[in-house]
Image 1 (cartoon, rainbow, N blue to C red):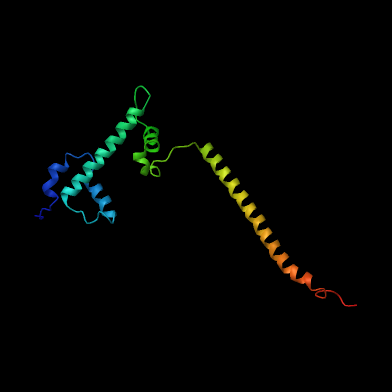
Image 2: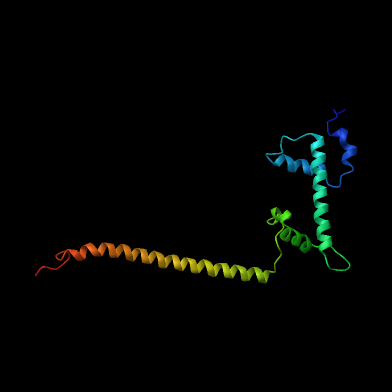
Length: 151
């Protein structure tokens, strides 16, 4: 028979949770700040808090939905994340959806801007080279015999 672990004592409590506690434990172990929190109480609390967070986010998205019958969609959650400052930390995880055509337009604009900046850098580089050449030429112009052909 296997020796019961400290987590076995909490199996009944974990059954009340909607999210799998083992997944939350894996996520907690991957974080250097939380890897030392291995107590079953901490795992239960983190799982419960995660459930509450997801429920609150879903509730806000549901309330913001204007369609009847109300169907919660990705765009509703995205709106909450991008318009509510409490959820701004999720902006990179929940990006706004765009069509392929819009993505292509954005990429073309960025490429044009990059090309223009490369061109302006070339012009700047050319100007700086000209200035260097001018600096080199100026001392030569002072010396009348330098570079002049002797007859």
